Image (cartoon, rainbow, N blue to C red; front, side):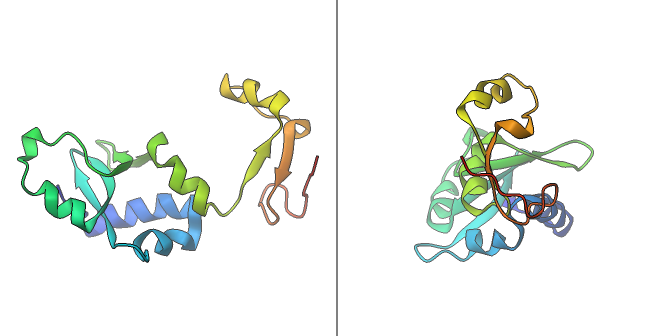
Length: 135
């Protein structure tokens, strides 16, 4: 486990910024305890500093994971978010879309959500700026 390099940090924050924007600072500047991002086996983990200190007692080859996995760097240097960071993305997302229960299963099976399947959209969403649907 090690801190991210400058290039990795830039790539990671650019990808994360697409989803939560300036709310990245809420992840790092928490009131309860300081948190940081660490890299282990090409995966980026979000971990509290106290837990990070505890993991230094475990050898790298025996350490499988720690904290919350936010994503993985590919061999080409791109970053892919994982579903494990969904709690943080949903909490700090810039734009949110609520899907009606009738369209929920279709989305889970990999289909597109038609406009009629949207329950609500946050204001200022780029695709549908100014359109807010309530049902």
